[in-house]
Amino acid sequence: MISRKQIQNIIICFISLSISSVVNAGPSTSLDELLEKVRQENTLEKKANIEREEIFKQAKEEQEQLLKEALAILEKEEKRGNNLRRTYSLYENQIAKQTDMLKSRSGSLAELHGVVRQIAGDVDSIIDTSFVSAQKPGRDELADTLASSKKLPEIWELEQLWLLVLDEIVESGKVVRFNTGFINSNGEEVEQQVTRIGTFNAISNGRFLRYLPDSEKLVEPARQPSPRFQSMAIDLERSQSGIMPFPLDPTRGAMLALLVQVPDLTTRIKQGGIVGMIIIFLALVGVIIALERFYILSAINRKVVAQMQDQQPGENPLGRIMKIFMDNPDIDSDTLGLKLDEAILKELPPLRRGLGTLSLLAAIAPLLGLLGTVTGIIDTFQSITLFGTGDPRVMSGGISQALVTTVMGLVAAIPLLLLHSFLSTKSNRLIHILDEKSAAFVARLAESHKS
Image (cartoon, rainbow, N blue to C red; front, side, top):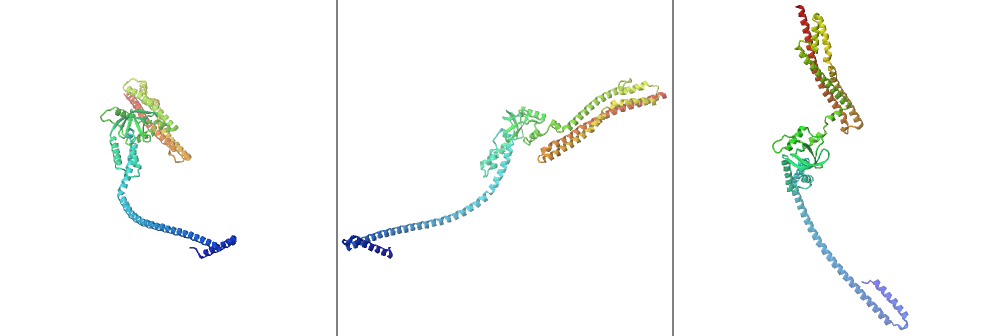
């Protein structure tokens, strides 16, 4: 709609236009033409306004229609939203119920999952270190999977795990020969026949083998058990049937691995150091002296025993004493007794030679062992001062010297003491025979003088 102010402005414009037309037209322009022109323009303007009003009305109707459609859509969506909320609430309650049911029903299954993982881990550790894996590699893949799995195992997986355990049990009671590659003591990989004794040992050409789980290879240790066990291994490899004696390693190779780390006799001697070498030298000297004394005393004993059956004096202690008795038939018994005592004193040094040295060596050996113990402890404390107590291997040298020298001193002293006692007894028995025969000669001379 056109306001009153707009109408006034239009009339003013028309009047101004009419005046300007009259002025410009001159006396030839009539007022009728001006009026007609104003009417035409007014008619055109009304027509334009009517068209504009129609456009506005049409646009308003379209907006109202769009509004109605939007309100209808809104109402429809609100209804749909209400339905969805009701459906969501219903499903949410059902999900909660199903979740509670799942938790209650999967409680035992979760416990079963933990048990299966634990059993799979135990089985995996057994399979990894088993000698059967050297013959059948890759058996522990299922056990590895179940041990690290985060989901419930399948039925077929449990069956395969059960079959794997049964296979290990069955193989533990078999003696099997198969060809495979292993690393020998020289570090070379060779292909030979290997005999597997259950899950306890593996041998090849009489040599015991170890199984390394990391590399899945059999390895021949540098050091082997005693020859007695190796001969048993050879006999087992050569046998075809029957019962054969054979040592089993229940630790599946752990004892054989420890055997490599156990020091042998040469290593023990080196651990004793200089003190240990001195103890060994003194022990050898003592043994040589004991052997020499045993040989000489045994020879003298044989001669003395033979001389006791012979009436002619020979070249032996008893024979020399008998010669003194025969060479002095006219002297008195006291003088003869003195001469025989002098002769016995002359025979004592050869009979007792070396026994004092043997006794001294037997006494020195444990003292040297104690000296080695003290020096070893000193070295241990020096190592502790320099390197601390973090690494026990740093202190092992001093401790080994301390213990080994003590053992070496006792091992040297005990046999030397026994040899000294044995030889002293043998020497004293000969001296006793000489004293006895000397007293008999004196008594015989005294009787002859009385008669």
